Image 1 (cartoon, one colour):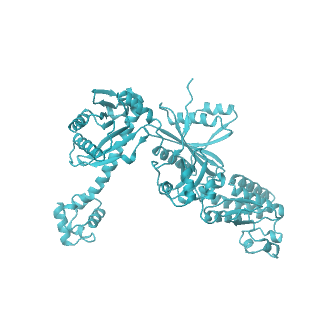
Image 2 (cartoon, rainbow, N blue to C red):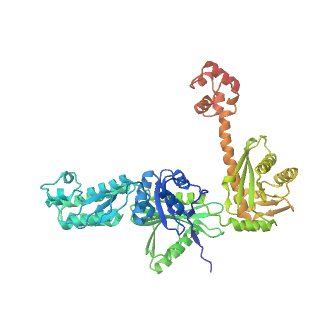
Image 3 (cartoon, rainbow, N blue to C red):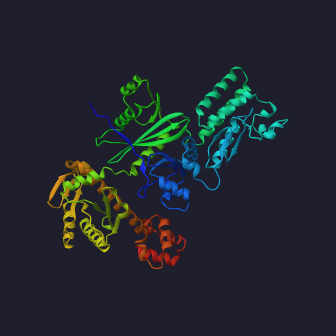
Length: 601
């Protein structure tokens, strides 16, 4: 029988190595026991979350920072969505630091009294002995929006008792539809208290139950031909629906799970976005613990079986782009559970976009490298090394020998050591990778010697025998004998499964697939060195496009160079420009136009 595939839900470890997106969203801090400490919102998650890594004078901020162990993110479309989601999560989960982590003043709360014939709604920054409290609200605007909706839909009074007792006619709040005027008996105590209970449900996020109640009352009044009352409840329904339409975080579904899957060459991330009571309440990211290849449909089926089989939920509503077999659905029915697949449409597709952004973002930023230490140990044995503390990998990036850039990335058994990454602008712009690698290795050795740093145990080169031999000669010239050399080259059709590993001494060529216990590490480092070299090369090339030919022209400053490129859209059109075309650029007269054309042609 096939063993069940394990899915591990891994929270990100919060440290200085973490890579963060620049999107808006929610960040949640957890302690070492995975207990939620704090929920915050950000327009730019990278800037905001990174600030918690810096030491500050605020004692409460320091107390929070010292307890943070894990981080979870929820990416949102807009900053306002993040604000609303933050309030929902704070209200439901009540993280301790969201109550304590504040300035000199307390955060406001919404209170509804309970010991009165006609309870009122009011705001207070102090704890109340009686009644029900909602909050605290870190954002006052969000709190005021909630009160506005409650007054419009449920028409709960907000006046003080002294005013309430002495009214002889309805106030202006009644006239503008924000109060039911219980002060003058325009609503019964029973009906008013029903409205109060519905207002409490609204603040608790139980929108579906409220709408069901309103529909029932609307239909009831309509059947009795009390169309004025029926219209009143129709307007209330529309008010809540309008509120939901204005924010993508509100979903119109009470309980639904949205699933998306993202994969790269080495890992797969399955993201689960949970919606409860019409709100996005949590996201979870799962990583299947397997080296086997599965289709997304297979992964989804195995995940559903593993995750929901032991769940207490009877009705499971799923929104996803993948399908599972009828047999699995039938198996769930046999244990009294229904799996309902919701069709994708224009109203709910944004939920799939959120789930997909979660999985792809988490996959890009995965910070768990627990598999690297065993791979280091296996590689040490394979290469017969006494020790393997660090590996440095090199790659070259250029276009036909221009802007030649070398990368040097560093790995330890804990993963990438990105602070030690280096790039080098190769002095000789030639279409010769072997020559460029020799220069990069030579400069790296000199740099390590100058800073009195130890040499790594192993150099990994992106290339074949030619590159390997060139680097070995360079090391021999510098009398370096302690660094082992290996290289990796693309095989047939440039597919990774045909990659070849070249070992310098003793000389050996191996199909990397044969060494599966280290292939992932070697390919990961090769791809990372390539990514880093390409990034640095592109940055150099973009600067060169602006400066190369124009640098040779006298009397042309940096600002004018940029303006010329911006005006013509590139060097090709600039070179083809006539005198009159050049004169249209601000700062270019007849003499300068002739000078530019003469030098460029």
